[in-house]
Amino acid sequence: MPNSRYSLHQYSVDTLLNWIKTEEIVIPEIQRPFVWSAPKVRDFIDSLYHGYPVGYLITWPKSDIYLRGGESSIRKRVLIDGQQRTMALRAALLGKEVLTKKYREQRIQIAFHPDKESFAVTTNAIRNDPEWISDISVVFNSNSRLLRLVDEYCEKNSGIEGYEILMPMRRLYEIRNNSLGVIELMADLDIDTVIEIVGRINRTGIHLPTADFIKSRMAASYST
Image 1 (cartoon, rainbow, N blue to C red):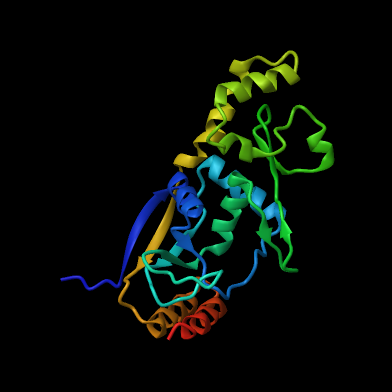
Image 2: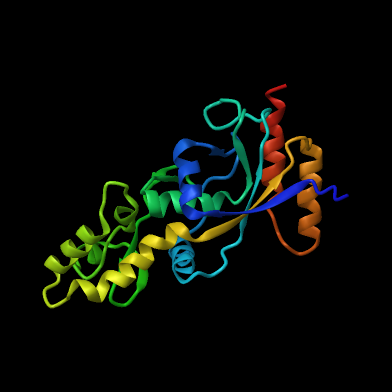
């Protein structure tokens, strides 16, 4: 009889976005800020667009860890690894600010060129260029309609027909249906075991930020 202390899942980007919106997936109180560069966020979104694998998250349904704001993690998924990917989704697709290495709130906007099917970090030049959608979060706004966005784009770019960019726009929108792997640790694991699991993964050559687990352990100790 198998005695795995984890389970493997595939969840859609849309599901993960809903978890972020409802705070079902949460981050321990003490963890590093967002360290990815804007170009790395761009590449991450580009990989999702092309259907490339983008790594996985590790979660732990645990109730004795303090979260940002001091609340308990009861009935929530504590994000053990994958904070950067999660925050990249939150920033690029939901249009939310991230906390930088200097502990400043900052927007990271990713632009999309429907004709070239390319992504870029938004600049002032891109904002002033009608050929670019300067902030892809508008595509994932629940109040937006894809066909309306296509019509608005064509109005700004004479000579471009809607059918020419509908497929790239639909493909961008359907990023929400792409899957990310999630490793869910068993809820009854103690934090020493979780740290040991991470250490063993690191020793096999797949680096995970062990320091984050130590910090998470520090945060957990305050709840006892």
